[in-house]
Length: 503
Image (cartoon, rainbow, N blue to C red):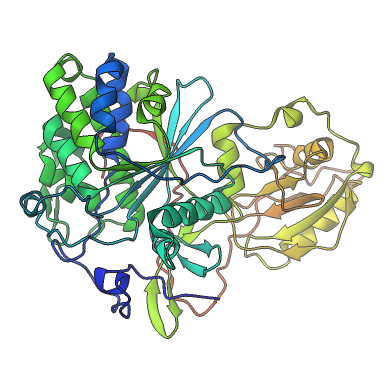
């Protein structure tokens, strides 16, 4: 079924009818990102404070049973690498005082249960590299047991019927796992107050903008060039989405950039060599966290990270259309669900079985072509060209729209997948649990299979060895109001280096 997934306010959380979709202003149910404290926690423990920090960190930390045991035979696409789901929202810790809430221009009223910031911190097996993978809050996705909805509502639906915070965490984790194919190893949720207190204790954090910004909705008002942000300004900076070309997607960039700059601040000698400041930061983090694990053990996995080795990325998206749900207009982020496996593989690397495989003969390879490009007849043309090249081609079909052309294959058919990839340079070969045979999914990137050269004649194939660009994709009219085409949001970026500015 389909649900009305707009952000749940306090009235909705108490069982009232959800409100109209509208802008929410500071002090009125706003949801602010609050994950910086988690990354700070891991980075400060690199400085040798682990023993003294244990007590500080665990004072006030709430443990919840968020991670479901894995069944035998479950496939973990990234092996021993760790994926930590970092969640920020504006829930109010029980120890938050009215005075503290007043500092944030809000009240001690419980806050909202929808999650505003969701980032998977992917740490490679040896702990030296990490990628912050952002999941836009307005991503329109399948929520298990609920139906289609915005990703930021998954936690709320999990809390219903006695599920509480544990139920909310489990449903959010399951939703992200189903969407990304990544296995979540740990979960950390930080409140608005935690974010504010960490930045307050850390001191001003430097950011650099290519252009001046003034957004009355978030309260951010900064000139072009470098600025030193205090805690309140930091809250405004990371929640800005109005006045940005790509709205919610550009807000993810704001959050990724700020976290990287904060990492540089934490690792500076003036911070690491100041025990008083360290203790204050750790105490600020500890009182505002829910997690499934021991925080010191978690942070130990990050002790070899450096700001320049922390990259940022956002799951692939297709735009920000306005759709109609239950008679109401709803602005969403359309996720490239077909392209996500290729995106994830780009982060975790190709399976060893694929890299070692030798391409099979075309005659022993059966492939089905699906059209996700939006170009009419593309799948039929590619199938005919594969047949002409000696492959066994199944009946062509259609797929959901995707940007990236992929050769999907089940485990055990690596050699056949390599044979198809060999005649389609630039396509990404992806192991998948959703296909039973080698499947070529054509994307809007224009990659397709060219016809073989005529016997004894001049080659009609391009010089690059087998692909030709398809005509530009023509968007299908599905009755929704779509925004202008957006640039790819899947590029991996590094913001932790000195002198980096953003738009």
